[in-house]
Length: 336
Image (cartoon, rainbow, N blue to C red):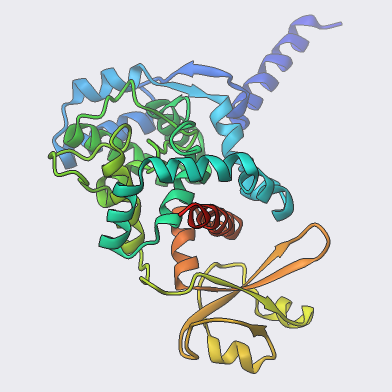
């Protein structure tokens, strides 16, 4: 046996496998001499006048993690059918915790709801779905999550490279700890799970203390969730979603992969779709279908349903927020 040839071939195969499958790396310190890392540093220096030494030193302490890449490939919104996904959020534990959370922060939540026109129960439900009311905000360092996805996840490298840049700018503006801040595997932070660009563009100072703190300040958190919704087109007092009855062939024909309200309500009614709604015939809407445990569920979603999907681009996510909000509000109203 030619052991030298065999060993050479094995080493070559291993190198090729490493290049083709970076997910095999469990965790390794980021190499700041890599071309894509150096290009990022150059851009931040040239376009934003950040200090090269701080950028390099910070990134040298970042770690690329396989667990982040694996999680990115299998989010719950894509790996579970609706009837299983729903159970994660619509259950007695999360509903009751939401009631208690609302009652604890009632004055601040309801003041924000009145100011922005975003219902209190929607604000509470977003926080319930995202982080179980601030209890589960993520254990990954934000710098690790964003660096891993920016430099080792080619499918969305452009997006996460931009978010990594936003994170450095956010740290300069709001004194966020670059190496200490933790969040989700996708770099979302705080109780409302804002990615860095959303933090910079949509967070707001809810208590007028001169800071936008989405980690510990509930007044800032409530105001920022509502401000995010308004910034994406939320219609105060508008409908969100209606349960509908329709022929399966109609649902198949009108349901689109893209989440976007494109049909006039009047048109849907003309197609024989039956649903109750306060929306007028000219309002824009969409057909939403979900895999129920026993049968396909059909819904009509409106502009406000679309806005919820701007928080997470999943119709299952939006429906979970709506149904959790309804369940919490029912119990809160019963206690009043």
